[in-house]
Every structure is written in structure tokens, then in C-alpha cells.
Length: 75
Image (cartoon, rainbow, N blue to C red):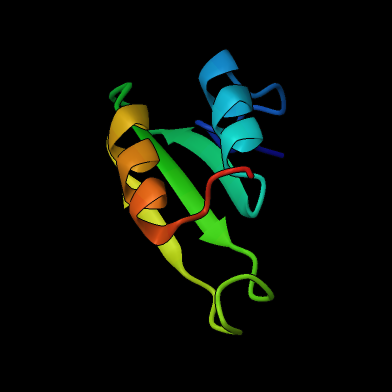
């Protein structure tokens, strides 16, 4: 059995903060073999007008900006 690289069961502090700030999104951080990280968010269909959205950014701040534009921040 081979493990999937880049998938951590213990999210980074950055991901934990993003999850608290944007509770209506499923957020994770994936990294490739070369160490480059990507931050990924999937919207909850119930809060996205029934249409889930997938947002991928290279940095946490870029993801935060994208999610802020979508209005997904905590109340």
C-alpha cells in the first residue's frame, strides 16, 4: 500500500485559521512532490445557491481574498 503524498491528517495552523474564518467552506492544503502548496476550498452547496464551487490558490492569502469576495466569511 502506498501513501498519498501531500495529504496531512493534521491541518496546518494556517488551514485551521482559514476554516474558522470561512466555516461554510471545506478547506485543505495539498502539496506536491516539489514542496509547492496549494490551498483548496469547496463551498457548501446549501450556502452557494445550490451550486458548489471549487477554489484553488497557491497561497493562503490568495485563498482568503477569493473567499472574502464570495462573502463566505464568518458572521
